[in-house]
Amino acid sequence: MLASLNDVMKIAEEKQIAIGSFNTPNLESLQAVIGAAEELELPVIIQFAQCHEPWIPLSIIGPIMVEAAKKASVPVCVHLDHGETLDYLKEALDLGFTAIMYDGSVLPYEENLSNTKEAVAMAKKTGASVEAELGSMGRRESGAGDCTGEQDETKIYTDPDLAATFVAETGIDALACSFGTTHGIYLTEPRLDFDVVRAVRKKTQGIPVVMHGGSGVSREDYKKAIEAGVRKINYFTYMDKSGGQAARQYLDSLKENEPIFFSSLSMAARDAMKDNVKHAMKMFANQED
Image (cartoon, rainbow, N blue to C red):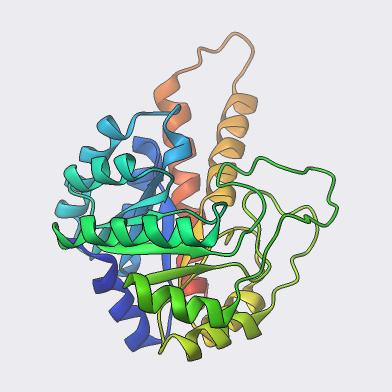
């Protein structure tokens, strides 16, 4: 069933869990995520990031995501992740997305504030929810950036006092905070500052905090993040990696000169992603795996 971000955040708050938010830039990943959510009977967020546009246009995958959410047996929020322009946000809203994220984190504060206000005004017209970002996790959603394993000096941790002002002035529904996570593959063990999350929650009267760069975090750190107030966890890299590994294993299993069928390869990737998503969702919901 189609749900807004506010709908699933309410469930997360009531149960003191986090809702998994998974990128679904192809049919196999979409089937994997919704299938996992239905088996576990948990709400879920499916999302598409603007940087994935070269993989498949939003205009093509967006309507498929919305239709799949409507037919699901569990609440499914259809979310635009890391929308970088207001026009792109509007395109998602016009397609029926129930939540959008405006990412102005690399812009000067006043410009981020102004554009986020416009995003909220647009979303109100359709009843959609809005997530925004304050602070910077360094590497972008694609995972591009420094690959040396050295400290990323472009990270800017979220200022809880500034967050309080930002939330009050924009009227957003969820805030992505920078507290030590990074998009993409972790090259060193992340050092997370959960005090940032707790302070943001306290100073904003409990706004749902979003963890970006959620793949690769330890079970113990997920638990600490949720206890601190994280209610939405973005997760894609390790899910995507599991699909790639399954595709490789399928190819390695073939005998010499045995035909390669793309449909079989894609199903192997889909099934592996589904298993990976189920594992992640159980951790976010504080369930035993």
